[in-house]
Length: 191
Image 1 (cartoon, rainbow, N blue to C red):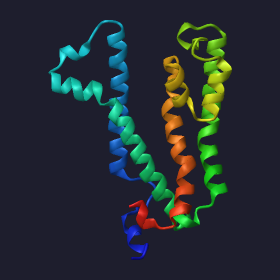
Image 2 (cartoon, one colour):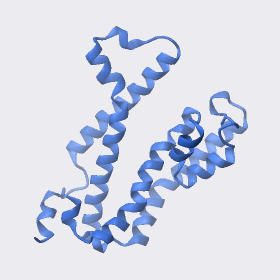
Image 3 (cartoon, rainbow, N blue to C red):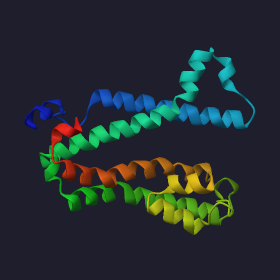
Image 4 (cartoon, helix red, strand yellow):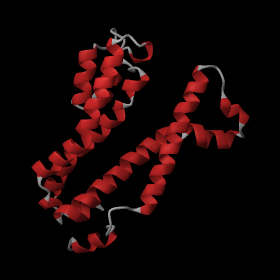
């Protein structure tokens, strides 16, 4: 079996409209999930205003939407890598990682700077509980993409820092993806 048939499943342009629709729906469901959690924390359960099946879909599908994001990211990065390098075993590790750093690190550094400043200024919702971790420890975890592990070991960070858990999970995939591609050396294993 050759690797050529796998290419027929790859999109020829930069955008995949069906993926964009799924991503849009997933974003909406994640946002609704977080809004609903805030309502619950303040003892106002808006879910009771809707029929139960509707409320479950609107307010409790955010978790599954995040998983869907990971799957879509895997598909998109695989198809983009195949367009860029032609085959999985042709992926340039230095180029792949340079592109990831250029895409992620500038925004990550800005977010860390803003959250650190708010923590140091004493804003309650941004304070890292010293019993869980120091600010330095949280910054190191964010920069080395293991906030998910830190929270698993020490407990949740404030919500503004907590968003970095999903970036940590996703970046583990991106760190391992090109190595896995080079190890497998066959596109058919990606499908």
